[in-house]
Length: 139
Image 1 (cartoon, one colour):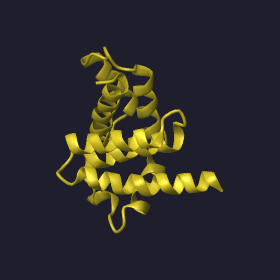
Image 2 (tube, helix red, strand yellow):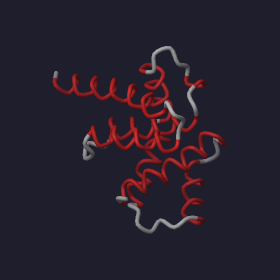
Image 3 (cartoon, one colour):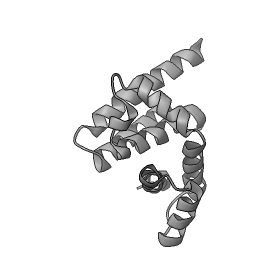
Image 4 (tube, helix red, strand yellow):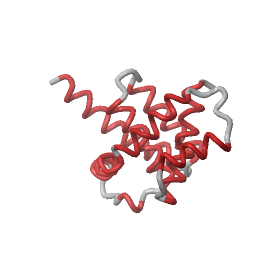
């Protein structure tokens, strides 16, 4: 498993916990580092994702609702929301990461940690966002 994949899994754990508690995300990040080993991870990448998602939290939620056709954000499982927010952050703000890599990683996380339908659900939303982003950048 790559360092970035481990970092994404750790970021997912932090953001999922934040989704449930809504306590200070920076404290959650610090507590995670105190209680779990970050060995074999890209801690700067982990921090970048967590901080980025928390910084753009409302924007990410609006995009999820916009592209999830007839789904209110509150109806989407918290784990799926966290995965989607992470991936949307990467798609919009991490130009150094290929969009297809982001999409594949998010789908894998959904399959591993979500429900039976999470991978397909996450793929559908992210695919729409990715294609719109690529279309806008081509204009």
